[in-house]
Length: 194
Image 1 (cartoon, rainbow, N blue to C red):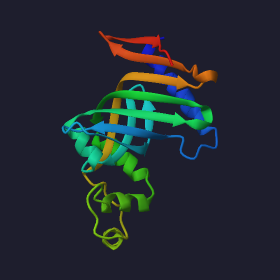
Image 2: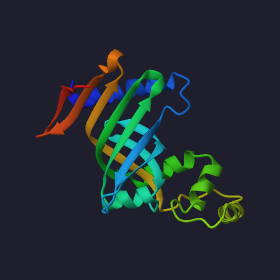
Image 3: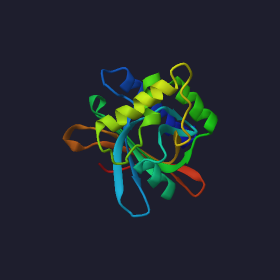
């Protein structure tokens, strides 16, 4: 089996195991980005799709992370499932999903999440909570009897991996680490010291 598909299959099996536990948000991951200023930032998001094509998440392109990804389209994702004592690190290049894919996901979201996504000027200063609530109320009135359209600045990103590392806890901190990476036109694999 191709090393990349082996890694993706391992990830999907771990995610399925996490979904089978009482972990509140098994698709949660930490996304690390870095813009032109060289200052890295991280935040927790939810994974919406994982396949051989990449790992998909959605956000506002005008947010801090969106601006950083426009400046430097590389990112790292870290999935940590404490209940499984396992984690996965994924690194790679990031690109926007097709508008049709973003539209389909937007349409699947609860209406209040659509209103919130359209109302929020993510990462921008907010003078008061009332300011945000007023924008929400205005959008609820505007779209009372019709679907809420996806704002052009709200879309999905697909991280195409070139590095995937699996970590599993072992007694005495002698953890298992398996690394997969793209090099010289092929996927490679090695074990790594804990």
